[in-house]
Length: 82
Image 1 (cartoon, rainbow, N blue to C red):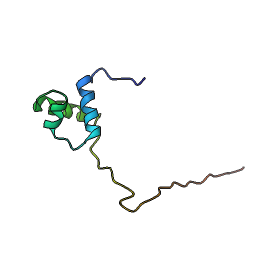
Image 2: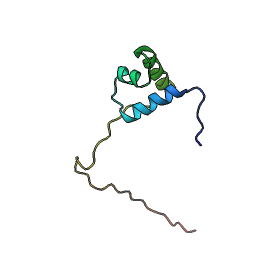
Image 3: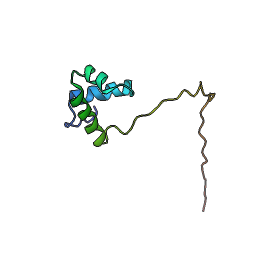
């Protein structure tokens, strides 16, 4: 079971879950989801950002729609012998 930091309560975890589902949700929408008013919700989000729990907000792009069908990784193994 993951180690849950005691500084983060159930509302913080609900906010994090909601942000993972929709990183573009407004503070008002998030506040409604976690049953807070906008100001305390914004403060909690700011605290999570300041604590480094929220590292940023990103756009997930569709490789297929961009024309990238396959992603590959290549590497080399060196067999140095004395």
